[in-house]
Image 1 (cartoon, rainbow, N blue to C red):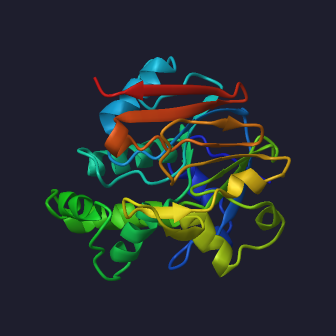
Image 2: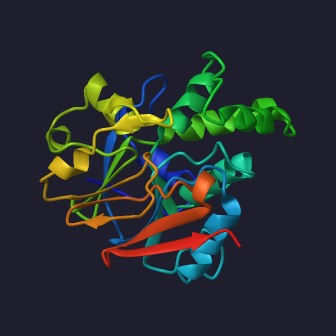
Image 3: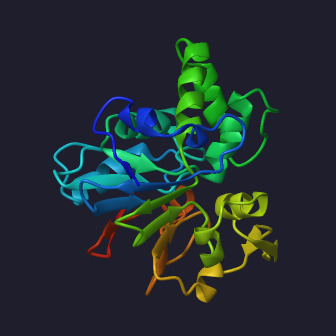
Length: 263
């Protein structure tokens, strides 16, 4: 197991070469933590003020600065569809690089990363506003490079609390936890399992967690929920912040759900 860094880019420095992703993110990363107390935040989607409110509600003295012994964890999709997309990316980046947070890559983050790596410009999912914020910032070239490097260091899966806790953006099925990730696995972890369209035209996804029987508790997001349901061995923290105005976190190992809504 690897130990967590405590400041600067120490987390990145401690990762072996196979975890430093250039074109295709595929890593599962385990941390032997200095603390096994985590505050895991659902899909942020550019709603930085709500994240600040959530941190305050969880007892933080300052935004994104957890109390001693706790650590923030993000389930991915830091930007898009919000009013503070670039600010959210940079806030999460600063928290991770300072050792105060961990994060996994989400599907929106992966789409932005492909663009930053020279791929085609995405045209949906709210990512257009995020790209415009980046391009209109001071020194956009240097900014793109900073974000690209940060996204390339993020894993798809985090194993925490000696394997008792798993964080993956859209979830993970039990067999994936005991094998090297395949291309199908990576697609599932980022996007879930689409099985059709709902009446409103949105993607309908299989509820994989209904069939999950693993011992590890899985925290994920990606599919917006009208109500957060804490199941015996999983929870989806995506409360659809860009529609509902509500951002949700899980405190571990207490298994307490904490939510804030726009004022």
